View (cartoon, rainbow, N blue to C red):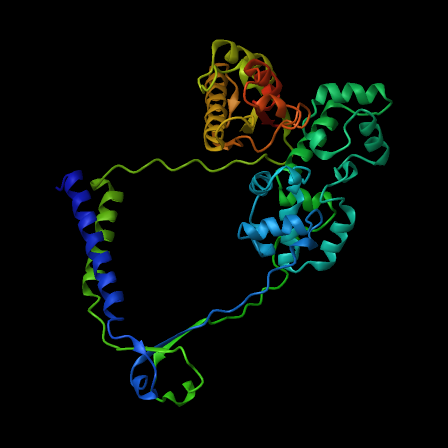
Length: 439
């Protein structure tokens, strides 16, 4: 029986043989390429005609909230079609806007991918309706299910006049304020609004369609018909008379090296891969757990943890005080519940390197997720660990209810008090935890 080392060596030898055979075949077919100055040079050979076409860009300014300057910024980043924006999430778009400069900081792109999907899918009448209901690309509070005009007015009087501000509200506090203002609500009602707001901010297409009163069908292309476009034509030319108008055609000899080494290498690598899968090769990596979403009908237990109270500076190791805070804010609330899933998002402030901030926020979110699972099992909480989503958002989503980067900008200059800067940006360094429990 082969050892693991021998199997690995043989596998890569066969892969090398396959790659070498393919490169030899590709290069060998072009050794006799020449310009087709005369038609006699083309007849009896294989000709490749490559055509580069100019393609019109989509009118990105049609998206509510996108003006000429933002459209130009998107073009500079290689984004020219509605389908490209529809495939992005609001975090990616917000990152492009942030890098474009402070003049784009007012933009809120959380509905842009949904609008672009309607346009790309051909749902034009539905798009016109959506655009008419938006202001600068933003949803009104009344679009959240359960919030009517009077309730939206009361929320505005409490300082919550937008979907982002609602997403960051605390259910218990907001519910008590609304009751005091004469609104007949429960914590469950308010928690549902906040959960909807968070889904809308994350660009959840199903939630946006429901909020705008559109059918789920708008998330699919309106037509199932397809057509083919050909940009490169290649084949043996018997009569070159039809090519008299071409000035850039090239002809190459039809003979190519044998593909036998390529097929031998490919088949050998496949057989060795099969041996590995059957347990005769290297150990397989554990499959990544499937991503989880909030099950329909679940209640949401929401907590925001300030990371300064959980970790030491630049560390992703939970302190004893941090664990105690998680026990108090989350574990105590989850006791006696059936946990069907969770969403944990780590955030950092704008100071420091972007990539390091993103990595640190991901590691801190994972540390919280690992401790929650460990503690839940110790406390006998029914915890579905496979339905936990963990994200690192880095500095992309500053806390909208706290000091903005502009408010703290003076503390970023050379010679500024680092302690004061740390305190100013502290609300941005946080971990948001949503625990979904069975109703």
